[in-house]
Image 1 (cartoon, rainbow, N blue to C red):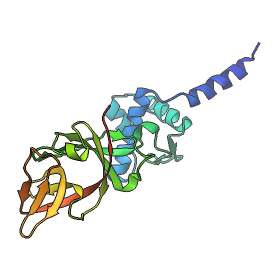
Image 2: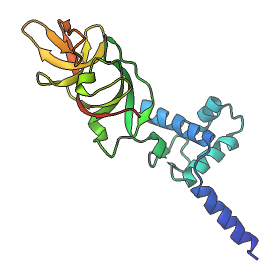
Image 3: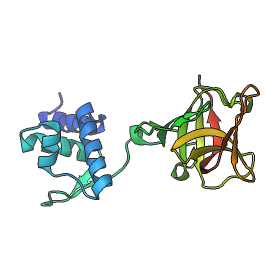
Image 4: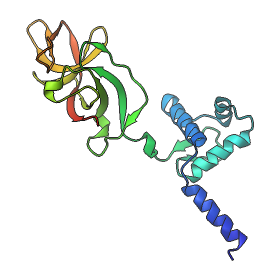
Length: 212
């Protein structure tokens, strides 16, 4: 029969291997946001206020759990000395930058979702957009597909790009600079090109992931 001390060790080890709870994950993301936005982590009091945890011991339980599971490290006697050790799986991948119109122009809105195409593309200079519309179907890009965009400020004539106009609208089109304007050409024989005076390249198409 196992000894109580052995049972406690096994239970502690199992707790370390278990994935963080939903609450612990939320605390981690709060810490991560503070470090990224202002350069240092939150205090125990700030975490308690954000999650309505009245007792400092309640906050410390979450921090100790995250530390045991290898997500953070904490410096002794330093209230803000919380450092991130590694990025969890659910936060890996390319940033989901929003939706991009493949029809008429419409704003591209950002959000915090992430799509994990890391094994296919270098994550440092690529981002992902989900296509809305059918203006690029002749280029085998359909409504609902994911496009992987290589961040660039320049493009060659004929490249498929994310182009942003002066009013902030972004669209997925072929890029054709002309003498006194820019032609944003759809890859759909039933649609007419869009002509603008000014536009900037936000990135060039690097790949397409088809919807299932």
